[in-house]
Length: 220
Image (tube, rainbow, N blue to C red):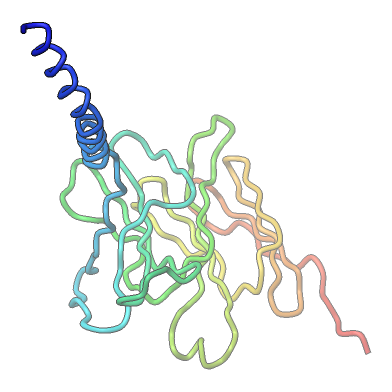
């Protein structure tokens, strides 16, 4: 009698095994979904002195595409302009840079306004691989510029802690070459019908020289 009862219980247990396996898989999948690292949603930000807009663009903080190691207490993020209710970002819509410090509860905005698009952001390092400054190329986003059809760039240098912003070149058609050795930044650029070279002191961001290398003429 006991043997027959044992076999009956074994058959019942075997019949329950598929259900138990499915339940265990469901628990594992649910736990995995809860514990998987998910990217945190972007934080919408409002610049100082500017009310939050009910229509048009919104500004969100994002990690910069270029990896910048500014030290253990300082992080630089890009401020991306995004159309409200748009599923994706338009290309190259970086409007500003902000520094986030462990010692401060506020964001340090590099540009006072949001009227520019940053088309290039790169660290400038010395021989010891230390960041001496941050190179920024920006294009104005004003309605007058859009109407003209010309998109001339301005070149800025930002100190590694975000305390200094200096415009070193204006109305540049194209930067052809950029080199720095930790002491000087050398830029070869195209402006109007000439190719020019500028040298900038990496200590104080003063322009040491800006001269024409060649003039271009139209073929007839």
